[in-house]
Image 1: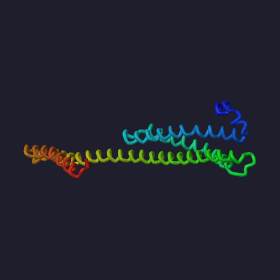
Image 2: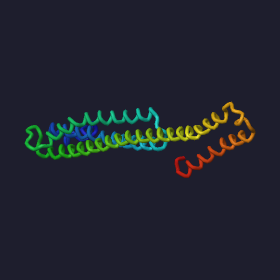
Image 3: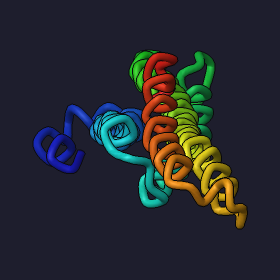
Image 4: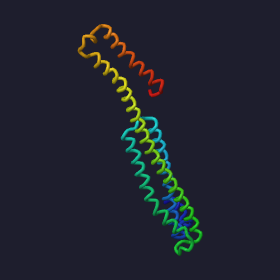
Amino acid sequence: MHKRIDSDPAATIGRGVDFVAYVIADALVDRHFPLLDCFTDEIEELEEKIFSSPPSPALLQDIFALKRALVLVRRVLSPQRDVVGLLARRGVPQVQERTTLYFRDIYDHLVRIYEQLESARDLVSSSVEAYMSQVANRTNDITKQLTIFAAIFLPLSFIAGFFGQNFDVLSRTEFLWTMLAAMVLLPLGMLAWFRHKEWI
């Protein structure tokens, strides 16, 4: 901005205060495009982390920090868009007709930046939903594994409790071998059944 004004003052200051205001506004608005690129890269990196690694509280904090940054930039850009929109209208006494066209170009840039921010905010909201879905899937997997362990050990507990009773009939050697065979075959059969049902 300074270089543009210093290099050719006649082409900037010589064209009026309204044109200098355009040069300043144009330079400020153009600085938002690299920021949008940073937001886009950050969102893509967060999406990769969500689906490539187990969910963690630090990842959720990063998502919400990015969401707060997007809201902050949107809050800053909203009044800028309104002011430039006023300067881009015809009939403003302080702005020449030919400078109005330049302000209209800046207004188009601000509208495009604003739309990209909205899209980025939607993507971050989708990232939060994807994170919660990953947490729910992980919880379901853990619950399923614990349920399978409980289902396997429940009949074993019954067998051990039944054959562990203090009866003369159950203390015979054949009952001991029956109990041992049942304690080995029953879990194996249940595991085979779970695999057949594709539960594990």
